[in-house]
Length: 78
Image (tube, rainbow, N blue to C red):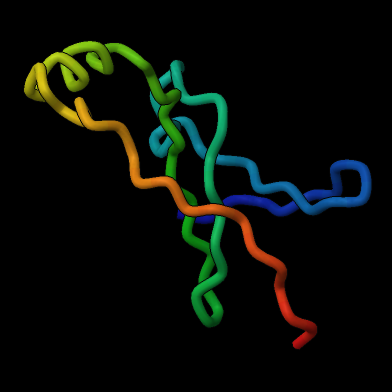
């Protein structure tokens, strides 16, 4: 399938044909050059849904003793 590259401000843009369009909920993509090809991957919005379930999976006594204390110390010049 052929498409066109065009100028958009100081950037090049690629027109994505309708048959290859991402879902309408995709707003951002990651683009990467691999040799002479460009790879475009959708970046789905990350959600915090389920985060509390992950925290709930920790045992009740998780870190009951706190963390180990490491005092600050001077760094030498490297």
